[in-house]
Length: 343
Image (cartoon, rainbow, N blue to C red; front, side, top):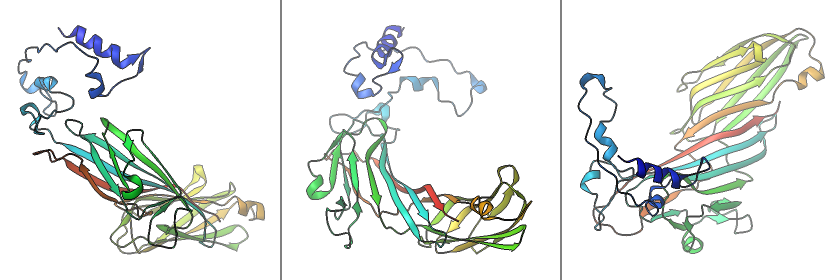
């Protein structure tokens, strides 16, 4: 019964098999056929999975609507008005073998996922003391300095220069509001201090000491530290010095990949962890063999924490719409992109 409507939708959405327009608000301008409501499917009892939506769910619109007063229509009264905001930062850090930072950059973005009814205009405010560009102001003040920043095409920048405020109509689904990059010195969340000692001609002792320099109310999650070993390594035994608060700690020698793997489910802030390994070699440890060890690679994620101190001051609906109060969820996530220490 709705074949013509579906054909019209597909014709607008696809071009030579490639998706072109998928946003509901944009499609409304091109689709003219009205849907024909079909009779609901009879109850099939226990045959249906309890988690499956009822057949009547097909009559609900993809995006819930609001009336002229900003109130939800009765059809969408039970649907939540939500918008999710993620401030995601990926770190690229290179340490020397004595723990000093040789190179460090932050690649960050603010991304959103919108489930708002009626497509309202939003206002997003960042730090008032945010400085863009190394020459944009003093880097010795308390302000947050980013090297460069670029915005989504939907963002209105009329209030950016004097108020660090963005306004935009969010597209449906997930999108990136802005990307930013920061180089230079910043406080790294973890510091790595390795050491190698040749105890016998064919035996090495490797120690990796990691210090968490994030506040004690934060933690590193799903931490993994890899130490590549030379091809002539034949065996290795690992020992971990546990400290209170750390969970899921495990260290092992992965023989087919010739590496030490140290994992921690939770690495508490303001704590230190140490792993020691005794490595046996099939031949003497020459300078060439020594160069095959490392570099150490660390992977982690820190929830509700960001290194750059970029903050969302507020996120609100631009127009005052009575009865329209969406749920706003903001979270900060820091991840390692390339976190490497030389040996």
